[in-house]
Amino acid sequence: MITIYLKQYNKIVRNADLKLFDELGYDDILWIDMVSPSLKEQKAVENFMEINLLTRQQVEEIESTSKYSETENAIISNSNFFVPVNETFNVEPVSFIIAEGVLVSVRNSEFRTFNEAAKRLQMNYRAYPTGYHLLISILEVRIDFDADLVEMISRQIAALSKDLTLGVKVDVEVIKRINYLQENTMLIRENIFDRQRVLSGILRSERFPNDIYPRLQLMIKDVNSLINHADFSFERLDYIQDTALGLITIEQNNIVKIFSVAAVIFLPATLIASIYGMNFRFMPELEWRYGYLFAIGLMLFVSIGVYIFFKLKKWL
Image (tube, rainbow, N blue to C red; front, side):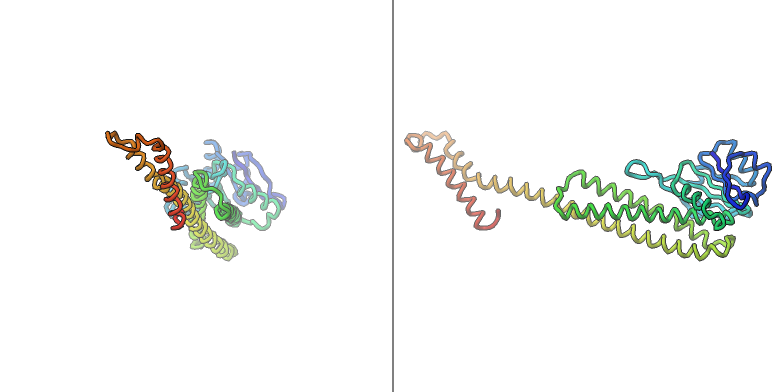
């Protein structure tokens, strides 16, 4: 699917007709947005813009040069975007190319970021005279959404910490919850680092309009603060994990302690029973009328005595 944003009648008009490329020039087009484009659409854009679109493998490369690069007639920037899936995220790469002031974006999924950027463009088209301004706006929206994700993870971590403080039983589900938050925090942190590399490449460029660079400085500060916040969240999760494992260890020690005390309490009784279970010919208690009651009473007396001794020592 392709969407062409045209500058017509002092407003932005959306169109999806490939024949427009035969009728219009670069000055008439602001943005060409492609979602899972067909081969025909790719060829039409490549011929019109005189560029080569990147393959998915090229977009997914992690080298700094693959995140931002410049050629003689184009600026190429690749960035990762999140797609929410159930309770986690999938990372989808997006390719941006700016040539002759026209922004070309290629992606394989729908993103809230692009819908919001398109809405802002329709509401105030004068703020986006070129594709350079539009690219910065898209990255600004994405950073705002990244901040929302960081805050969401922070709230979930705070709720988990509160549950542990209130004495919620630590079980497998709690450990899985901690691991889930750790995975999401790492994904968000990696994604923000990706944004930082793209902005650093743009900041070093001399081909963007001068009014963009002050905005870039603010965006980089925002990204750095998000990285610090994500680092703090990850450290807090490590602390919570250590606390949870400590609580599990204490619970296990208490269980072992109960079994150990029970074994020690009944050890004298077991010894007495073992003695009277010996098959010796001479055992006077066997002929005694109260021998059985004496043995039972002796075992109870010794067990209760051991229990009282433990209580006095405050071992129980």
